[in-house]
Length: 419
Image (tube, rainbow, N blue to C red):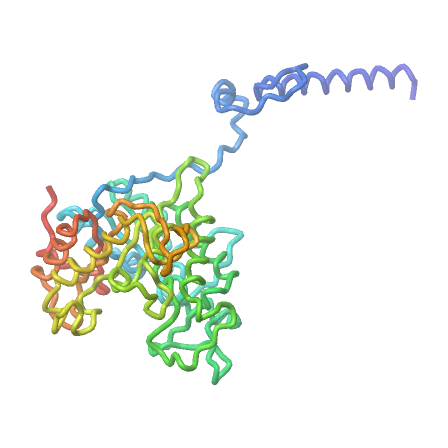
C-alpha cells in the first residue's frame, strides 16, 4: 500500500477518535481537554435526554408509606395473600376500621418464601403458599396508603434444614435434624451461612415494596424432646450471647440505605414474658439484648400463653386487660431505663460493682408494639377481649399494636370504625 495513503488513513482515524472523545465528554458533562474527569450528574442527563436514552437509571423506586405514629395492624398469612377473597376481606377491614397496616408473611413456618425470587439468590422452593404477584399486590396496597410489614420466620425452617441438614439443630440419638413436637426442625442459631440466607431474603423483600421487615422465631427451639438436642454451631449454654450476635449481624447487613436513600425499618417478635423475666426463658431471648438492633420490639403478650398464677391470676384468659397492661408496663420501664443489670455488646459497664451495672440509651417507649390475641385458645376471644387488650396497650402509654388471628378473620366488633 502507498505510504501516503497509510498516513492519510491514520490521520483520519486519529481525527475521528478525537471527535468521538469530544462528543462523549460533552454528553457526560466532562471537560474536553482538562486534567480531571467530571463525574456524571443527573443535571447532565436532563440536558441530554435525547442522546442518553440508552443510559440505564436502575429500577424505579417503589412507593413507600412512612411508619404511622400509631401502627394498628393485622396479620395476613401468605396463603391468605394468595387468595382474592382473603385479600378483599383484609383490605375491606382496613377501609372500614381503624386498622392502617398489614403484616404479610414473607417466609412462613414451612420455610417457603412467598414471592418469586430474583436472580443471583438461593431459591429453595418449598411446599408453602406462594404469591405470584406479590410486588403488584404491595403496590396496590400502597396506593391505599397502607403500611406494609413483611414477616420472616427465621430459625424454625424445615425447608432449609432439609437442604442443609448439617446446619440444623441435631438429634443426639438419631444423628439427624431434631424436631419439635409439631415435627418442625430448627436451624442452629450459630449457623452463619443461614444468616446470609436470611439477609438476602430481607433485602429482596424490602426491594419489592415492604416498608418494614419483621423477624419471628428468632430463638432457640423449645416444645420438644430437649434432652435429645445437640448444637454443633453454637454454645447452648451461652444462648443470650449467641442470639445477640445474630441480631447485631442482621442489623448491620439489612439496615442500609438503598439507591434512593431509604433505610429498612426492622422489628422483632419476642415471647411475651421477656417483658417480665430477666432470664432468657431457655430460648435466648432477653429484651435488653434485642432493643439495640431493632426499630420496634413486638412482645407476643397473648393472655392464653401465660401460665396460671402469672401476676396472681388464676386464669390469665380471664384477665386479658391485666396481662397486657402489666406486661407492657414492665416493658416500658425497661426500655426507658438508662441503666440495666443485663449485659449487651451495645452497653458499657459502670464501675466495678457487683452485680455489674451497665449504662444503656433510654428509648422512646413507643418502640414497643405488642402482638395481641384475636383467636380462641384457652378461652373465647370476642369484641370485649380484643378491645380490652387494645385499651391496656394505650393505658400503658403506647400507641401501636398488632392483632394475630391464624384464621385471618378478625373481630370487627373489637375495632373502632374508620374516621
